[in-house]
Amino acid sequence: MLDEETIKKYVEAGRIACIVKKEIEKYVKIGMKIIDIARYIESRIIE
Image 1 (cartoon, rainbow, N blue to C red):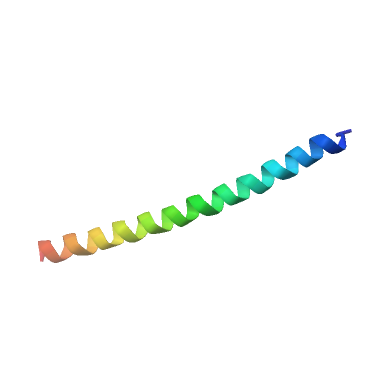
Image 2: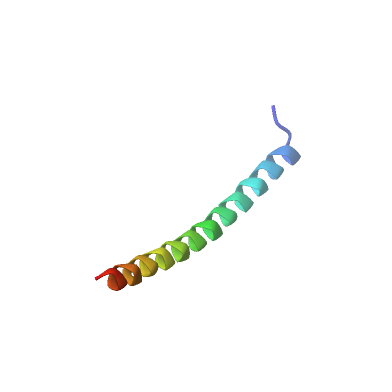
């Protein structure tokens, strides 16, 4: 059985992991937009 202090640490770690995940997703979306723009420019140059 986990004591209350250990449970609090797990809850806090889960909350931090959730925040980090949201931040990473934000930067991945920005990165994907940059890649899409680069592909568009590349396709216009090739034409």
